[in-house]
Length: 365
Image (cartoon, rainbow, N blue to C red; front, top):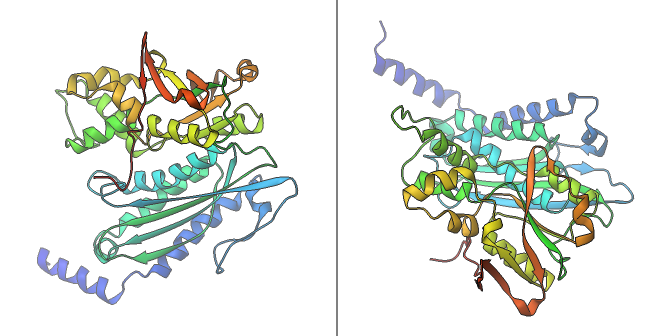
């Protein structure tokens, strides 16, 4: 009978003699990416001339169409923590944040490039990590017919680094920028706010997915909020409707927080804004749970980031044409664009004050 320590030694020897190389992973990812094109109805296949396998991808250009490109960087212990982010959810989020940017431009996502750097420890001792990461990525990519066409894999000294690039497409002149808002336009937001920030606070306090709490009736709400942080849903459908039907005058996704992203939009548009606290669609679990855990739901909705909802402005004449829901997600009017001299302000009843940008910044203490 082989003892446990002998089995361990045998596994270590096998791993040393037959290590998995990055080229093995690339071949596996290439096969998975190739399976995305097996559907005859896949529109990306007709646009892609050369995908994974060469030094660069080659894509056809169509007259009357514009290409929208975005990139996002996720760094371990800055943008996520290994002990609370299952690899499949991390793969999902890596793509979701980029699809959210494409949606914020009113474009249709088409292609993705994904690069990841991991430490030798993760590569050798946690070999399933990268496979599960890509599985989460592909599961979301398949939902939106997004084709992986390239990327890179590298070794890092310690922390995981992820670079996600997404490419989208829109009709010429129909991509939506941050700079088109005018005084009198109404301000809307998709979905609900504050859930992702609440989920992050709960993770920081030690909550984790999969924990058993049979004596805690609120645990389902806790997990729901954690998933808002770890598994954001990009509002691709709403982005397409607002862009293709030319309903929105300006748009941005809420990644840094409503207060900061509203400031970004107003700065680019040369405008001011007034929003009303009573109109803010705060996540129901945030209201139900966080008030009892010393977390202010309003502050989470205003300044918490990573909801990845769409914040957009609509001229009054277009409001009647807004759908009630897209992909099951509703929108809420939260305020109005004002002249630049008004500044960015918030009202609660008769009380009005300046709304300062207090969302996420990478280089602040």
